[in-house]
Image (cartoon, rainbow, N blue to C red; front, side, top):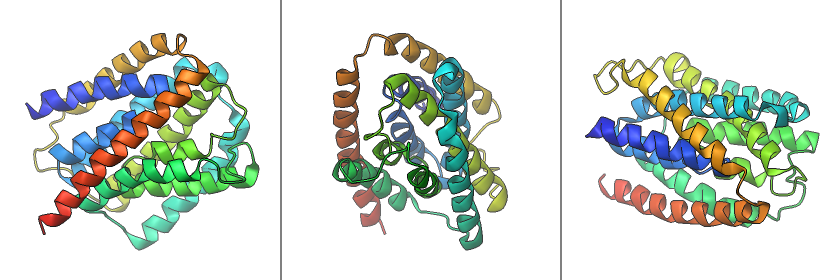
Length: 247
């Protein structure tokens, strides 16, 4: 049943992310953290989301804004170096509380001045902050969303460019947990067949969501994003505090 829940979650969350450009990642991270040890959850989530986001970027490749990506990469690599020096590894409680706080914090920061991904300095900061969030909590969709609120990009460009940066972040997460921290998942929680399975299921969900995206208006896109992230924040905050109560 654990693997059925994992694969079902992969399809549904990939579908959601393909439409909203976010939210699916933090839902899936919550599912993985609920069912698996932290190290296994981080690595499997990285593989799943790298595949889903990479495929989404491919499907929307003509909308990718490459001028944003160059500066973002420098920020992302800076965050990886910082974490590699400190060797940080979060607990389940920290993961749930952070992914619960991210959507709420994002709502308060939506109107913050200068948080526009099209500004070079802000793009670098985005790379640092979003990658740090991914390495700490596994997912960072609402945090990344903050940097796109004030942009003038169409929804297709927002989703396509986010997909590339998220793919990078999840690859760095796999590198960090699997190689830099030298965490080897050998406890049987992740059978080998599960990795290609989550990749295929994520691509199926992404493909289905891409077909729906063209029928979603800009207004619907913005409203749905806000509602989803608030609900997610509340659920994961409750779960995080429940985890703390276990100690």
